[in-house]
Length: 162
Image 1 (cartoon, rainbow, N blue to C red):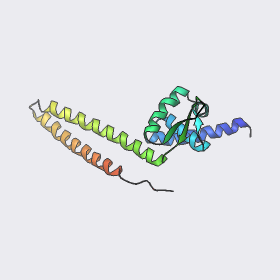
Image 2 (image 1 turned 30 degrees about the vertical axis):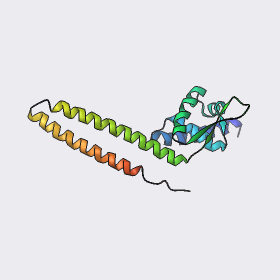
Image 3 (image 1 turned 90 degrees about the vertical axis):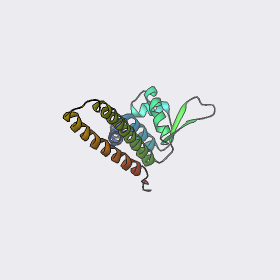
Image 4 (image 1 turned 120 degrees about the vertical axis):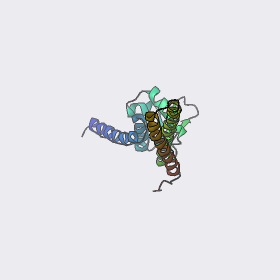
């Protein structure tokens, strides 16, 4: 096997992990960054991450901000070196859980807000149709609030350790 074959396998590994990360709310680039850092096992420069993942340095830089906020990576500067380095920092599953919960909470809150706006609009009408729709809307809103409570409980679940 030549070097190209090894690079193809690494790319497939990154893609596979990236697909999993994408399915739970991350962008593909986040998954590729995490996979590259885990596979490398050490800190990597922004340029190395760019080469390894196939994304531009500017795309990598923007994506690192979210991963840093989630506590998954840490940006590192070295004395006498102008390059930005990145290393794995926190528990990857904790970060993934946090990303999922944040995305769900944001979506649910937006839906509840929309439903409440529709409720206000429907109350302006005085008809059997609007009463029927309002009844269904009330049920939807109640179910969304139930889902909101479930996600809050889900956020408290501890991630199993190795």
